[in-house]
Structure formats: C-alpha cells, structure tokens
Amino acid sequence: MTARSISEILPQDFAYVILTFIYSYVLLMYLGINVGKARKKYNVKYPQMYSDKENVFNCIQRAHQNTLEVYPGWLIFQLIAGLAFPISASVLGVIWVTSRFSYAHGYYTGDPQKRMRGTYGYIGLLGVLILSITAALQLLHIV
Image 1 (cartoon, rainbow, N blue to C red):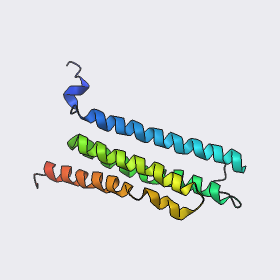
Image 2: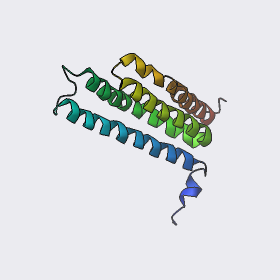
Image 3: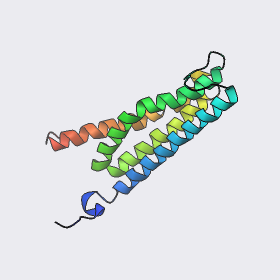
Image 4: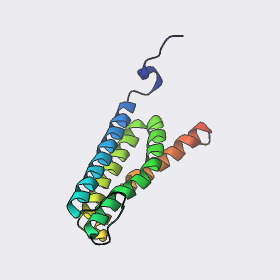
C-alpha cells in the first residue's frame, strides 16, 4: 500500500476551508488574549469567570465564552460543507469568523446590546448548516 497525497483525498479547493479554520483559530486566540488582558486590568483572579464589580470585564469574557459555545457546531458544519462545497463553505466561514470579531468589539463597549453588530454571522452559520444538510441529502440521493 502506497501513501496517498492529500490532493488525492481532498478536493483542491478544500485548501480554502483549511485557511478558514486557521482564521477561526486566530479569532479564538485573539479573544482569549483579550480576556487575559482584561483579567489583569480589572483584577479578576482565576478561577473567577466573572466579576461582581466590572461589567466591561464580564462583556469581554462573554464575547469569548459565547464564541466557544457556538464554535464546535460551526466547526462540524464547516467541515461537512467544506468537503462538498469548499468555495461556498469558505466564503460563509469567513463571514461567520469575521462576524465574531464584530460581535466581540460591540460587546467590549460594555453595552451588551452592541454585540448585535455581529448578527450578520448568522448568514455564515446558517449557510454552512444548509450546505451540510444538502450534502447529506446528496449522499442519500434525495437531491
């Protein structure tokens, strides 16, 4: 048995999906670093998740935490959609990841309503969900 090249296993355009995953990792690191900086600034010690005094810290923490809560589902749908529709999934993935930066920066103001600046991310999330459903239906020969 000979080793197969990755290009024999995955569609060439899947490279864009991989780059989208890397972009999402940059997002997670950025959000995590910001929580660390806010811990120092607002003197919130581990293992406290939130502060009783500093609402801005809580908003910074929630922006990171909420992204982590949604991330596993997005990863699964991004992978499935990316295998079947790599270019479309990558565009939708970039929309979702970019929206999480907007979401975080809105939240960082200390006004939780401003997190809604990232609402456009649902285009990316629902898009990869729909593409994943389409891929499943194609495999079942339903569409």
